[in-house]
Figure 1 (cartoon, rainbow, N blue to C red):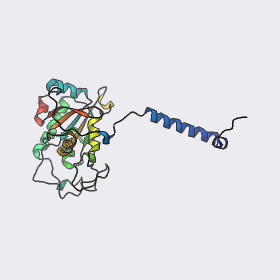
Figure 2: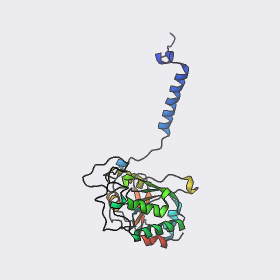
Figure 3: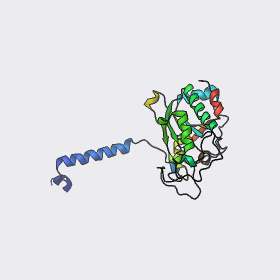
Length: 253
């Protein structure tokens, strides 16, 4: 008894069958070839963000690791004017009603940027909270074109509801994540290779706030302008060093 083809194949034009077959093959290939990735919700919070003395890096060893790339450097924004508050701000772009960088904070952000250039550290990406003080720090250090605003880096607001990752004019609660899941992913995931930095891996630089970092990485709290240098390990991260503003000038390439 001859085998019969299913009705779809007997009644569908050959070009349509080829198109469907090609789409199925492409879908299977995408599923098979997709790289594994850690889900943000699966990443545990750490309890202590000071480097383990037995594994910490400093001086020339730290400079060498930073120049090799593949690290995450998380800054709390530099010094601000605490006579100002965010309470009356209508949105991320309402800088007139936010706490802003002080003159010292602006100078510190510029100085950090110059030291990063002096050390010739490769930059894969620069992410910043969309608040005016964090964007100002990032732009002064890395240039405006290099910075991508990410609302998921925003400090969680008491009583507000998380609303995705868009940010913008929807108020200061727009786009933040109460559990900082995306921040954890950025800390744990190695930065992608970038042709902009040649054969070396770049570093991911993040300019955010003290509260989100402490919430996911643990104490001690970052001072204004302080940076934590992290080694992303896929499902966690390891703190290699913490640097105050003036520490950058002490690193020798």
